[in-house]
Length: 279
Image (cartoon, rainbow, N blue to C red; front, side, top):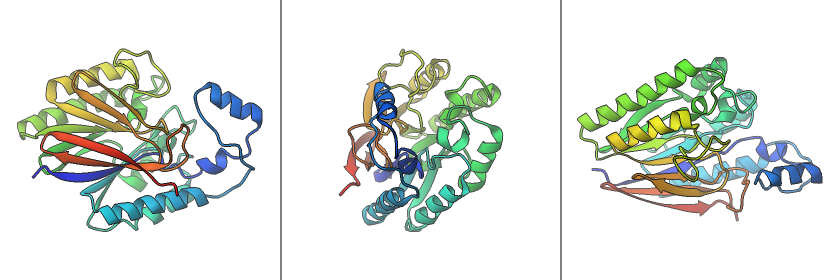
């Protein structure tokens, strides 16, 4: 059967609320010029906001009983921060055992500078959360998870990035051989935010990797890409693939509230809706 529901979470990013506090007017204005909305609050420490929101998201999942939950990256704000990782894992352990949990790495999870991935940080991520790219099936739908940070930085790990492209194509071919009804791609960065031909930008996969991925999608039936990274909702589509950048479980950087996405899969049809976690 291919009729099921899954929940997409993105950017719980433990530590970002505190890191975004105590900013000056000048710093808030600098973020605004980049299209990012910071809330002006006094400086504070800790993870109280993230704990409340992520716990609420897990509780909603337990209530809705989806087939699985996927977390689309930026699990923590600081790569390899053991305290932040421990809090995430403590709360995620509250998810009912009957619901599968799938992790997707974000740039904050494997890049000490939040931009450039490093192998030792990827290894630490794997130790805590499992493979950084892989595939799995739910019914007769195939899901491919990628480490999109490898595809946003051209400075390092080019060999690994090319190996990942080959992995996606191979998995798509296998899905076709196994008569999968549809393929869905999970990533942290969306393939694109406006158009497949858009210039390189901080918010999507670089053209050098985006265009080959879109060719694979067109050739093998990848119908949707669910991502995060924007800390707001963004919807676009082109050439038969829908691109959904979902708002954050954690700190919003746009007008959308902290929230989660419920996705219903019926045959080869996907419908989804964003739900607020804020009271």
